[in-house]
Image (cartoon, rainbow, N blue to C red; front, side, top):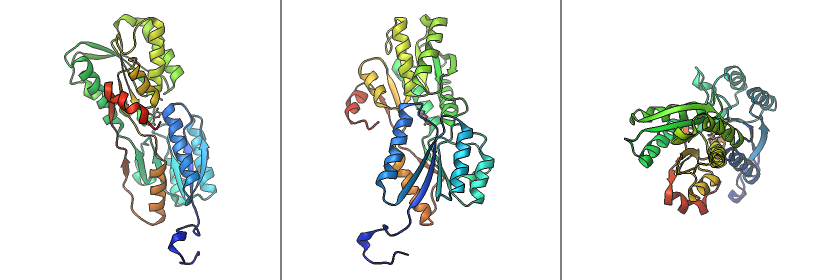
Length: 307
Ligand code: GYE
């Protein structure tokens, strides 16, 4: 089994840890950055072998991928679950095969928490709250503000919890009202489409947009400009993720706030996989450290953004 010779040889004689990763798709700049981070981990980490599967937004494809990973006897299954519910059956199969399941970036809802080992990702409630807090701070907490909301993928934990956190925080500002709230699937094109409809219905009375991700906000900005209003001024924009485009939009005066959500989870996934191999106990939630950016702080940070 490799013998215990030179320490400098490290683990190279050992068997690699095989990780099967079921990715959601490629709906946003955020997700593209996550995929890149995971693939780089698979390429650069000598202890890891990565099997990558793209589900094209379909839970049924993810379930198929998980079953195939089980059949291939991978060491770890990593899952970015497109929606929260409906995972019990397949995760019980993984548990029976004694393959640990690591949730990446989105959560699941299951009665039995032992069906997954850990969740690596963000606090979406906190992100929603921060979006509301910073918006109120920007416009003034005592103002009357009509908000339209662009939701992420229906049933996704990132959508459900951002919505919840935002609404909860808004209770502190009685003049702030969510006038319309619709899904735009976390994509730029849908963000534009839904915003166009909002503007057409009542464009003169929209003061702010809360988008569950930056991509939808970028689409909304386009819609606002085409409608003839000034995005970032006539209509304030707050969104989540912290992709470079959002920083650029803030610099250009077209957006106002982006709440950071870290997609660069490859290194953390590798670390967890190694800890599991070594029989270590891992925390149930490995939480990302994140910030909020607006104004000069966003402009200063733009050159160093990694995604
Ligand atoms: O915010 C969004 C994406 O699951 C945290 O999914 C992720 C979200 C992210 O497509 O841009």
